[in-house]
Amino acid sequence: MSENSMLIYHGIHEFQSACLSGDILLHSSAVTLGKFDGVHRGHQKLLSEVLRRQQEGLTGIMFAIDSGGQQILTEQERASYVASLGMDVLIECPFSKELMTMQAEAFIGRVLKEILHAAVLVVGSDFRFGYGRAGSAQMLLDRQKQYGYRAVIETKECYQGREISSTRIRSALKAGDMDLTEALLGRPYPVSGRVVHGRHLGSTIGFPTVNILPSARKLLPPDGVYATVTELQDGRCVPGVTNIGTNPTISDGNDRTVETYLLDFSEDLYGTDLQTRFYHRIRGEEVFSSLEELTAQMKEDAGKGLHFLSRRGVLPKT
Ligand SMILES: Cc1cc2nc3c(=O)[nH]c(=O)nc-3n(C[C@H](O)[C@H](O)[C@H](O)COP(=O)(O)O)c2cc1C
Ligand SMILES: Nc1ncnc2c1ncn2[C@@H]1O[C@H](COP(=O)(O)OP(=O)(O)OP(=O)(O)O)[C@@H](O)[C@H]1O
Image (cartoon, rainbow, N blue to C red):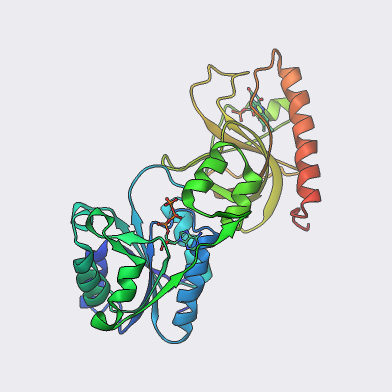
C-alpha cells in the first residue's frame, strides 16, 4: 500500500466488519500494541519492526488504545504521522468496558488471533494487557506455539540514561522544555489547528498574528513565547514566534489562544489548516503597562526566535 492509503478503523468491531465485508483483505498481520500517545522514539522502534514485516508481505497494524485524557498528539496528528511512515492499518480503539474486562488469554485468542490474524506481535518489554493488566510481554512469548504467532519484544529506548515514555514527554511539555520534548519525540512538538479570527489588534501594532484553535484534548506547552516553524496548508514552512496565553495586557485574560507572528509574511491564511512546531521557549507571558512596551518586547522576541532557529539550522530555505 502507498504512503497515504493507510486504513483507519475505530474499535475492533469496525475492523472486524471491514474484514467480513471484504473492504480489507487480511491474511496475516504484524501487530504492534499500546497507547501510542505521541508516537515517540520508543514507539517508532516498534513501528520500524512492523514496517519491516510489512515489506515481507504481512499487513502492518498499529493497535492504539485510547484511555481518554489530554493528548500529546490528537488522533488526526497521530494518524497523519503514522500514515507518513507507511503503516497499512491503524485501529484506534477506545478503552471500552469490553476491552477493560477481557481476560489476557481471551485478548490473545479472540482479538489478536481471530480478528487481527496476528503472525507477528511487536511490543515493548513492559507491555501489559488484559483484565487487571495480568498479561505481559513474557506471556506473549509463552503462548507463541499455542497460538502460532511470533512475539518480538523490544528493549526500552532511552534518552540520557532514562526510558522514553509518554509520561516523560508530558512532564517535559509541562515544564516548557521543548528541546527535551523534541529529543524524546524525535521531532519538534506540533500543534495543529484552523486559523480563526482574533481581535485584529495585531496588525494595528505592526505584529499581525495567525490564531489557531487546537483541539480541546490537545496538551499545550505552558503559557509563554516560543520559537516556532509553521507549516502552511500548501506545505510551505515559515519561521515565527508563537504566544500561548490569555493576552493579559489587552484582555481580561479568560480565553487561551495560540497565536503566531510569522516572520516576513503577509498573506491571508484565515480558514486554512496549519501546523506550528515548537522548538524552544523564549519567555513566559507577561502583563505590560502599555502597548508600546508589549510591541518592543515582541520585536525582541522575534529577533531571539530567528536567532535560535538559525542557530539550530531549522530555518527553511526561501
Ligand atoms: C511573540 C508574541 C509575544 C506576545 N507576548 C505577550 C505578552 O507577554 N503579554 C500579552 O499580554 N500578550 C502577548 N502577546 C499577545 C498580544 O497581546 C497579541 O498578539 C496582540 O494584542 C494581537 O492580538 P489579536 O491577534 O487578537 O489581534 C504576544 C504575541 C506575540 C505574537
Ligand atoms: N521507550 C520505549 N522503547 C521501546 N518500546 C516502548 C517504549 N515506550 C513504550 N514502548 C512500547 O510501545 C508500546 C506503546 O507504549 P505505551 O504508549 O502504552 O507506553 P508509554 O509510551 O510508556 O506511555 P505511558 O508513559 O503513558 O505509560 C508498548 O508496547 C510499549 O511497551
